[in-house]
Length: 183
Ligand code: GDP
Image (tube, rainbow, N blue to C red; front, side):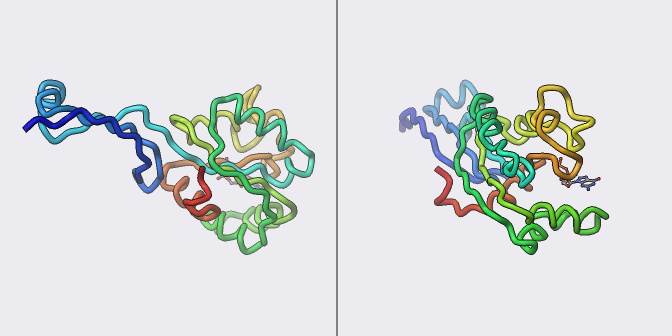
C-alpha cells in the first residue's frame, strides 16, 4: 500500500515545552531510502518558546518600548504579552528555586514593587537567543549591545528575565499563561 506524502505543521509538547514542529511524512519507499526505516518521520524547522519579563525597574523608567522593539527586530514572535503587578507571594512562587539564596527577600520585594510585562517569545532556539540578547545577570559583566548592559541598573534591578532551559521555560510559561492565550 502506498502512503501519500503528507506535510503537517502542528504544535506538540517536546520536553515539556510547546513547540511547532514541521513533521514531514514521506511515502514508505522514500522513508526507507532516506532514513533506512519505515516508521520514521523527518522533523525540522523547530521553533521554541521562552518566558521573558520586562522587570519593574525597566517598566518604571519607560523602557518597555525600546525593549519590545529589540525583541521584534531580533526576529522573535510575541505569542503573548501581559502587564501585571505581581504580589509578593506570586514573585516568591516564580523564583522558588532561589528560596535559599541570600537575595531572595530583596529580589521578590523588587519583583512585586511595581508593574512588570510578561511575554512569551518564540523563535528557533528562543531560550538561548533571548538570554544572549539580555546579556549577563550582572550588567557590569554584560557584553556591549546587550539589553542588560544598556538598561540594567544593578545585578538585581537588571531590566529583564529569561528562562534558562526548556523545562524552566515550560514551567514559567505555564505559571503565567494558559495555552489558549498563546497566539
Ligand atoms: P538570571 O537567570 O540571569 O536572571 O539570573 P539568576 O537566575 O541567577 O537570578 C535571578 C535574578 O536574581 C537575577 O536576574 C537578578 O534579578 C537577581 N540576582 C541574581 N544574583 C543576584 C545577586 O547576587 N544579588 C542580588 N541582589 N540579586 C541577584
